[in-house]
Length: 301
Image 1: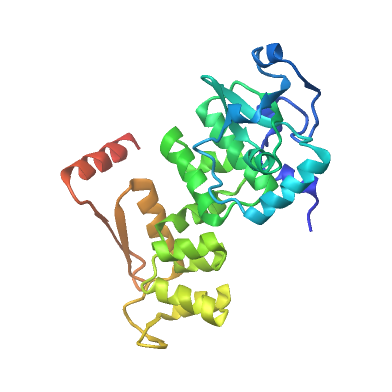
Image 2: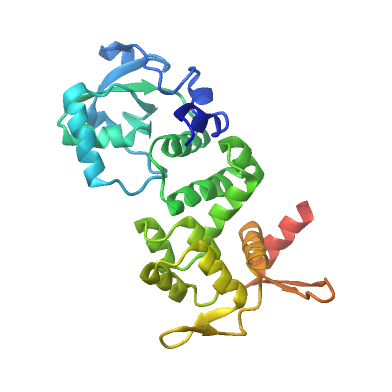
């Protein structure tokens, strides 16, 4: 098992590069006083808990009540040792990192919390929030994928840039984004922890994926089991799995279709001929506006 320090090194530049400190776990000196709060923002202060507001772009959407209660108990005993990272937002302070501590402090009936106030752009806020969650408490696979997609959608990142910025491999980012194309029922299983991301990746672009997802949960099938089932072209019958010639594409081809769909914003079908080594790519659009957007993207390449 890797050490805590080794895990942090695997996360690209990490939080320290954003916060100008040697380590995000470094405990900075905390001073009190209303005048200090209004000063420029590389200092740590106490703020009334009601002056803090959650970040709407926080990647983590689900907070375990049991974990919050446990953290609240710890806060009652020792207080909040590490400041909550915030940025000024009109008359309030928006939480950038540390929402769990803020929520637990409310349960613990703490009236003031230590904060580190920084001037940050929206892009920096998103990146810091992602890194902080990955370092501290794992996001579920869908929260993580949505975070990467947000960097691409709102800030024009490529998958390569997401990869280099967050210290994840390009294939890891691509595989994570593919999960967003799954049916809602499978996404729900992922959020609930009933399916692993490995299981879910094997179901991307597969017919009867919802049926297979249910089989995974009911029968405890491994990722390898599902990969073999998909590769052999197995699909749903009334109450058992049987051969179905309609599934002929291998997992790599299906994954490539999803990559193209994410990049182009249009449904893409790859028709590959194993014998000749050639084939065709079909890109489907629903109206002229989608066609115009696609043509604009192609012309820029």
